[in-house]
Amino acid sequence: MVGHVLATRARVDAEPALALGPVSVLPHRQRAGIGSAMMHAVLGAADALGEPLVALLGDPDYYHRFGFVPAQQYDIDPPDVSWGKYFQVRALTHYNGQRGRFHYPEPFDPKRFG
Ligand SMILES: CC(C)(COP(=O)(O)OP(=O)(O)OC[C@H]1O[C@@H](n2cnc3c(N)ncnc32)[C@H](O)[C@@H]1OP(=O)(O)O)[C@@H](O)C(=O)NCCC(=O)NCCS
Image 1 (tube, rainbow, N blue to C red):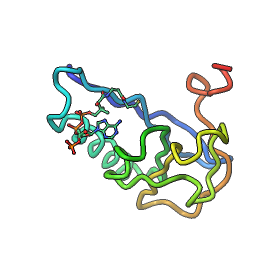
Image 2: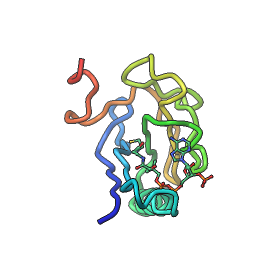
Image 3: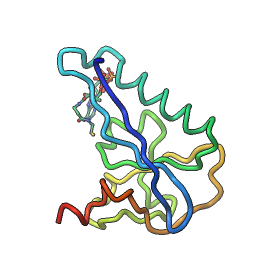
Image 4: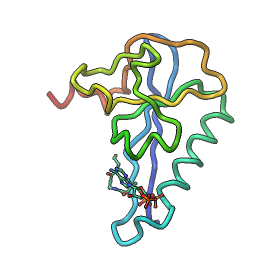
């Protein structure tokens, strides 16, 4: 194993969505396309499974290449307003106008970490 990506069940208000992350590649295997391959795989799988939306907290310079945009463009609020443009979403085929507050599943809920 040289990398991993994780998507977990989240919500936009009461509607289902996915939270993406963490994503990682072993340092000595980075910059060889593995991260991009994993991102395309997880987004393709999410789309095929009928998920409407994927959200993440990360560097826009990296994630915009996968179609992520600041969540505010979709009127989706991060769990923490200080996240600003770093909280991003990727709408999928089944996106149907979901908007509101994004809620991570309990293990990733930022309120757990103060
Ligand atoms: C981010 C990460 C998963 C990318 O994996 P990777 O296999 O190196 O990715 P790829 O080879 O597909 O793409 C590398 C490209 O991403 C760019 N990149 C990597 N991290 C970046 C960042 N934080 N901001 C901007 N660009 C970034 C590289 O410069 C490279 O660009 P290039 O293709 O123009 O040369 C990997 O660098 C990593 O594990 N980083 C440490 C953990 C981390 O930061 N995870 C993300 C937050 S949870």
